[in-house]
Length: 253
Image (cartoon, rainbow, N blue to C red):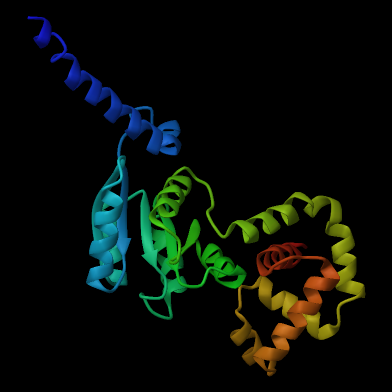
């Protein structure tokens, strides 16, 4: 009898450990849903191998539930409408040159789903583009799965996920917007050249360097030079901060 007494305890211990792990790995989701429902996610990517690899890797993490994948805009639309994932992992480069336009269209139709972009380039310009399109964050493809898991939980909880340095600089700008807004408006009116003012305006409209160059009939290199001068004059660290500031100027009466 003594050697049989511990046996009933073992399943209970395993169950407790399992529950604890699931709760810990889904902390952000648990705050949103007291019932600790699985976080439903989908995958949007063109190569089948990428879709299968992502779905398997993320599904293996406790607290996540894979609900489907798609390889083009119509397929993504059906996935969002019928399966309603909380987070959609969106392969930015694989879905073609119109990926950001696709994000904007799909977000309007399925506002409850958070788009987490996976991209080769995760610098300020790419982050600014995908956030303006309606994505909730961007993860560089060079990062590990643990980072992807954290990003999924963050955007599912309503947060924005991006390059930490870029995000920190943008938040620093936002925190000082009311205090320094007047000074920066004065800088725009008094210290920027006419051409620099035009570029600030175009950045606020969401145009990329190539598009700005074509619109203003100048080279991309010239646009880049002007932007560096603008950052220095306005004391801004990156394109996201400039885009937010420019958009505020555009929206003012």
